[in-house]
Length: 392
Image (cartoon, rainbow, N blue to C red; front, side, top):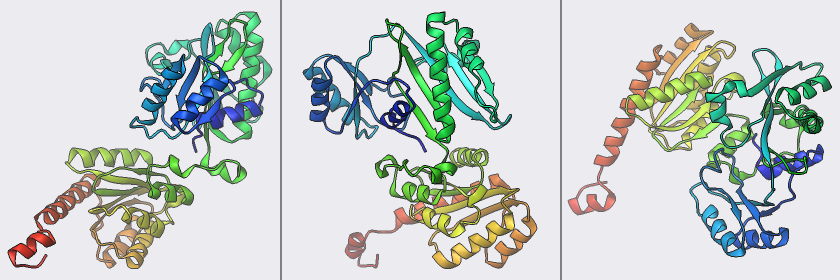
């Protein structure tokens, strides 16, 4: 679960990480009034759950009410569906730093990343000069030690006058990261003011969905979802991405899903949605298919490779979902993994063709989608059928 910047900064203040005192505006006039209240110049920052706001022109420094009105109008009118703007004082600063914590599942540790060059180009820096990004692994039992925080500050070349404050920011961010069950806690940029103070100019927080039962204070705004179906899926704990094509994907695993998505595109098809059918969701066949059906897809394509998630259980659930929901579109299945032989028998007994090759399954789904599209476009409309003396 991703938090908006204003929500993340509220958490920062809870953990005594300094942030600008801003105001939230949901209209152009409210944004201008906030600028008047805070005092010019101010920063207008679109509140969206996507990166790249600055490069898209959704973060603007404005000096006057006239500039503010023009900027707010442009931000609200953008294609990013901006509903709120965070208005903050424009902070004078001498340099920008970067610091974040995330989990490293491979080693079972937490990963501290820090750089003396923060800002919007941090991703380019990671690609072109990775040696400028400091990496420290933090033991998940012991947590971050004070010497590690101080070492990070000095390794970045910070002067002693700044090192103590930066180390303090690192320790506070780590406490937030652990106590709030974050997948990511990031400050980029972390401003250093002419007076030598630190200000978190931006904030990015992502909460582990599996830990949300411990945090009733976090509730996703329905407006943050791409569709009502995506919101329903989130309530069910089912990862879901909305698209606008013809083939609804029920797949197990992000890697397999990415491959299937690419194959659909390569073979001339389009994807209506992706729904994560693996992991803890492989027993939610009925609900998963119900969400897919709401897209009115021309085909539902189910591709899985189950190890922990057993193929036979998935097949039983798929058959039960078809029996109960009676979808009016073809269903293509390619169920592989543990219990595969039994899964094949179950699918055959229900009149489904259990394919074993992913590319073959994708080709069939794309072909069926094209057939459905051709049939729909060739069928005359009711008005045309009436003019022709036939039935629609």
